[in-house]
Figure 1 (cartoon, chains in turn purple, brown):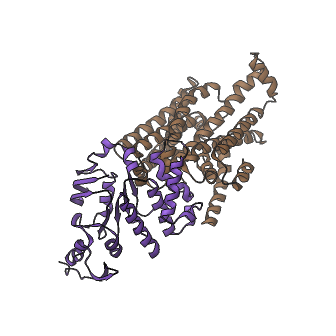
Figure 2: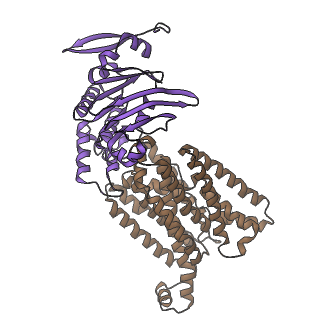
Figure 3: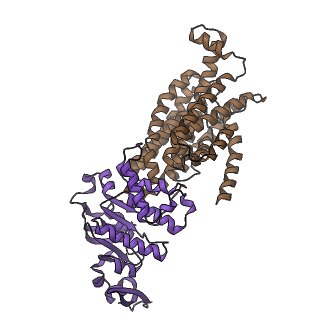
Length: 262
Length: 341
């Protein structure tokens, strides 16, 4: 599924959060959404998932507005992983992941074989099969995040929008999650992830969208987005650059003093 | 009740439909017990025989005029409270929510008190419950208006707080200005909640309202499951939250509003029952709905049967008994939750 956002404007309490955003998302692409705190990443992701009403601008899904596509159809084709991952009730991990199948199920119908297969493969993909029968409250933050990611994968959508899916994950599972996103994208799904880890973003993503103050500062392949000027302006930092096995990477190195970035 | 649930807790994985069947059976048994227990000695089988063959004997009259309405209303009101409590806890994602949290119960109580106060209560049998239903309706119109303007769940809770305190204040005002102490006493007693001296007319009045309310609440099960992971996730799973809140408020108003209108305020059932049964359905808010309905019916029938067996006269008010059972129970639950945490 293609998502096209044009002229996105949104303000809370008169303060503009996003201004004049144009963005096109394609199938088979792993896009990293990066930017400093308050740059508008989460807001943009929620708009792309049709979770926020727009002041102006429009979002089209395969050329259609969400209304035309229909709520249920959109839910089947677009999966959204919310930030933070709060779960109110102490449900078993399996029941949580099964929630991802709700858009595909008739109300009150039992899980079909296809549902069960999707749930099992989602658990396997996030290396969370061992927690299947545990309640969410008994899991650590990182383990819970993997179950929630499995929930989003279980939708088997054509587009996956994930807000900070790496929070709380140990380094190994961060790498595995990024590799997973890359695999999913390679298989044809569009993936957009909000990330704070620039090293991982640069290494794994096909394309980075750098937000600064509610505008797109840079949009393109990581090497182009990670210019010193862009990083200084958006984050107020300098980076160290290196390469290993023919892959370039950046490492946040030093915070610039205020004013230095301009 | 407690022995049943304790033995169930051990088998956490009991299949859902078996649990529902079991609770249905226990509800029927409790309703039977409620029929069998009363102040007048009654041979249930003679009474049933007389009633079926159309003989207007005293046992048949006791059964149909006193026992039957009491048992049926106990089951209906308990089911409504348990179901609406589970639904509200699911909507607000808060185990402390109860059916009246959005102000419906107190508005219904206020409506009934207004009828009392204005002296219409004696005019015709249904004046009181109709007043209660009118009160609940007013609260719902207010909540719908807010919901229609895109108000979120938090706004609804705050509106509920406002409605609760306003209706409470108006009820106090009615007591304050009561024409005589007996009128005030009558209002206070009614507010405590009771199933005594209701007739089949009351059953026919509330049954259709409750059935529609139950259907609305039960239809929310999948959406309440989706809501477990927060409002954004629920919407991304294809659920329309404005429509969901509309159904839940409407359903709770029909079920609980009419329950309060015929029995007065009965607390704790809607709060405690979902808590008690949640582990048995794997903490899934959708599956908790039907199960809590039956749990509420069982608890209320048990409490109402117990108060008739107790050697205390005048009979204790049902709302008092449910609170006496419910409050210590809630304490023990909090203790257990703290140990688990």
